[in-house]
Image 1 (cartoon, rainbow, N blue to C red):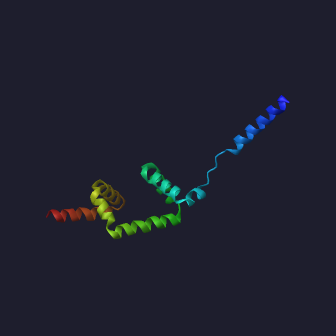
Image 2: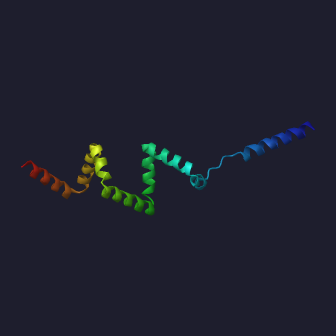
Image 3: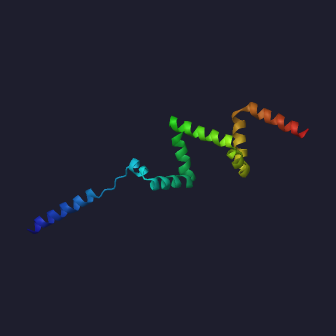
Amino acid sequence: MKTTVKILVVIGFIGTITGCKSTFNASETMQVEENRNAIYQEIISNPVQFTNFISEARKNEEAKKILMKTHMEQMESGNMKMMMDKNPEMMEEMMQKMMEKNPEMMQKMKEKMKNKGQ
């Protein structure tokens, strides 16, 4: 009888352990607005996670279209200029990258600067 009780306890214990395994379903989690907002906040508050998120988005054609659309809207609204004014180092970095990629632009900028000096 004691052996039977021990076997039943072991079976019950194993059943409890396998029944309590954690499952994560991303689509179910994202259906709850509170969960979505918490996930968004977690991603954007961590620069590494946000960079990884953007990197993943660039791998998806539909996401790339959305990123480009929102970028263009920012440019047209003037918000981009305000952000650049607040962060001059970002502006310098972007200009440097653009000039490295486009030597013609670099030449035009040099000419513009030369003309301003005269």
